[in-house]
Image (cartoon, rainbow, N blue to C red; front, side, top):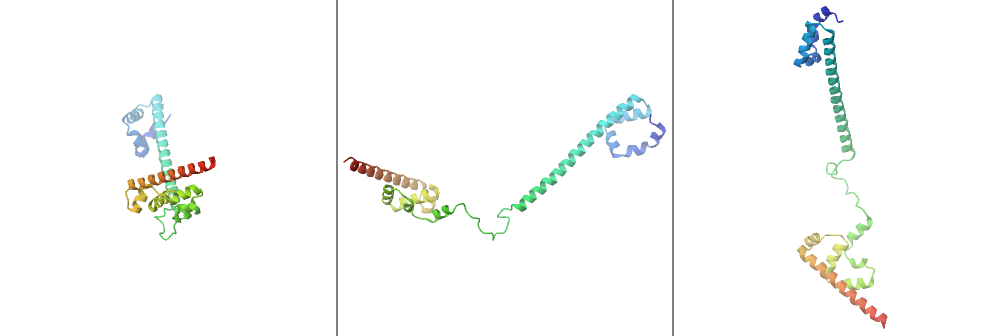
Length: 192
């Protein structure tokens, strides 16, 4: 058993320890502690010991979790800074950096081209395309060669989007009728 005289002499020193102070801040634990000190009983002393061990275990778990959070947050911050250093945003870096190369050389060539008729291989379609008005050819070139939207074409030509859509539809209708007429003409020649 614990020497009561030694324990009473060290009582003030023990109760000043931060961990013991925190344990005794719970009124139930404080009552139990004072009861054991005044009336030493083996069973109550074991219960006090068990309560303190549970309290201490809880404190150790909390300390471990706090340290892990701190370590992981520092590690996360290091990884973020490392990635920012490795992959800086263009606007964050030097503005004298040349423009990065765009996708495909073929796409660059097509973007510089201004005439869709140079890319048409079917003779009937080529002849039908040549029959379109200049504005229709321009709209077709922008749509099928440059991949522009109706709104982009309207903005560049100073027209409304609806007007560009009508020009496109009329051009398609004109090509379709010319191809069907050519097809019927060739069909008559073949059947004769």
